[in-house]
Length: 162
Length: 178
Image 1 (cartoon, each protein chain N blue to C red):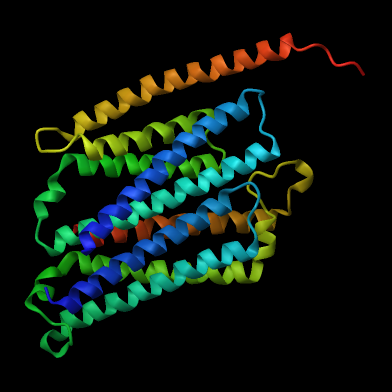
Image 2: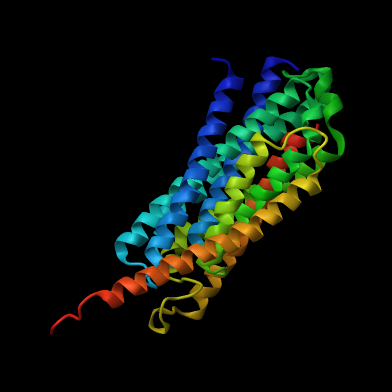
């Protein structure tokens, strides 16, 4: 492998791994009974979104390399032998992770305050919030869980599958 | 210092933080729960220790992936067929899921904390001692399950003994005059 390809593959794997970790941290914070602030949720979601975008950008670069062959700046014979099934699986799953991260970020940005106070298991019945906020909170928890699992699978396959 | 040494050192620091954090988590929890509840200071201490364990986990995973990438780039694919590596991945999965369950209060802390403690020690011991193709994945997992059972009972025994000792101390104190 060329040095540039090694660097790109490393950045790609670490970007998606950091995205998985950020989503996992967000998931933990959302599941906590208390202590979540909108700011804390937002910066975790932002890191997840940005790193997922970096990974996706690099993935497009690899795909371009696959399709364009010798026209691409990082073309080596190794790259063209890496590919088929896994890259296409990644090419579908990675945009989904980016889209999920974008949805999470936007919802947290706009409705973050109602989510931070809508604990899934409120400490007392008095603190239970309107049904809509609880529903939103559960949706975000589910989306974050899906983003965590998807990005973790991508990172794992990215490093394991040649 | 080459990148491989750097990653090994990082991986060791992550493991030290994880194993050490899990140990202190168990110690603080046993001390805190001997009177049946956690006060604010004990809660804060536990929160800090949880953060340490998570930093250790993140560092271990990041450097572990770095090491695997190096094996890939250097063509040492045989490393991926090490059963201990896959056993370590499985136990790491247990640690990650256990943290989620603890956070969501879906698992009692008296069960989740020993699970984390024994899993961290199992990962460390498996990484150091149980290496080589002669040890199968199931053997490592069998050791892990045995450690969980034995360790779980031992730690429950320690917890009961600490509670009993505390109750005895409280009973021997002179009654407070109002």
